[in-house]
Length: 312
Length: 312
Image (cartoon, rainbow over all chains, first blue to last red; front, side):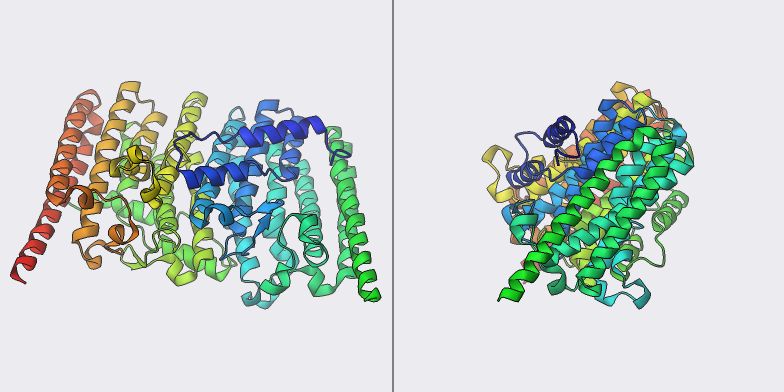
């Protein structure tokens, strides 16, 4: 990551993530342990970094930008804690360690996830504080659209019940639009909305979020098939065994790779036009470069898998 | 209830509860079913009614009062859905029907609970809309204090792990202060804060919430021991089997009843002083009358249990 993100910003966001939910020593031991574990594993913070940089680009104060960044990362972390539960993806590893429910039990994992969600809303409120009433109302509706029943939650439910979806809705891209694009949209669009972005800029950021969110999902699907847990830090090979949507399994790795490349190209085109209108957003090119790096990395992983298969 | 609450208000709140989370026909079937079931069982709406009437007493518009009332009831309903899960209280009945997870599975129950929470925050934002920046900040912090790790969530965690709490914290009242008082506090204090209540009025409403919240918990504990599921609409006799805090089991029914009566008396004293300062809050006497009615009802239940034991 140091090649694309500012190390200083990343370290600051990591510190803000770790210290952003201060719970007392009297917190019940299972709940306190689950929260500590979640806060000690911030993940790659890419969503928070995006939100932070977009907020700064639109002139929000550093303090407000940080509140929004940490809030979005808490929503994301909570969604992973919930996704990993035995009655969801039944995972054992996450962010290179044990899943929270494996250490402290399912009840503590659910309560810690809810604690992160409540704290995230409290931080968002602070991020909204100085915006006009109209912008706050728009932003509030936008949050629910991304995180609520019309967004992330429906995506997660479609992911879980993929096999029983009616045929036109059995599409990995459709499921990923709810499950993965929603939080990238929130990261890119929410700070822009609060910072007074024009409707054209908001539309461009939404398209960018779609291309990048789908790119991330394709990468995730490829890694689920081709990577080892020690590379991804999470349980692998789950999609086939759980009958989850996975583009690589549906159309094969070469077509999935081509689609990924096409999505990154489409993102670059949107970004070029957007950066011409709003030069402060040029920094977003870093994420496109990062996606291309990941594309190279997964190509290497596929190649080595193919070589080891042919030599066996 | 018609003897204490306005039937018109109650019907309006029930309609607002049922229609307040509008999800599309394309919502995944398990998630949509779980939400529909939760929205079709509004419960007694006592918390929402309190929030609505306090909001109106402090001059908030009917629309804002209704947003806050429904938000608080969605938080409450979500907390019940989570509490009933197999790894929490493992209940089968709630509000006179099956628990949501019994009908649609644990994953759908968790996602529906999160959908209610997200919607509740969106409604709260609308309830906050016209307040000053200072009042909004106070109110935002208050929400997290009640619902977050320092409030409801810690209470629920202490309830679950009651047997392993360090000795001075093994007290049913302490656990109830987190688990039960938190939402009553939110219902009474949040609309008052937004409506510009004085700090003396806020303190009085907080004391009232403590007395009434603890009263409700003692009633709940008594019902868990003495009532049949068809009277309470939920699984009974859980506290002993799950080693949960229960004042009746700890100090016996007669002492629990005396403590309940004392708490209602203390509430009446606070209320008398408060109503002298803020006459618009006199309507709160209805809740005190309702608690006394419940006290009479549970006395009858205990008496009939004693009679049936002595005749056996």
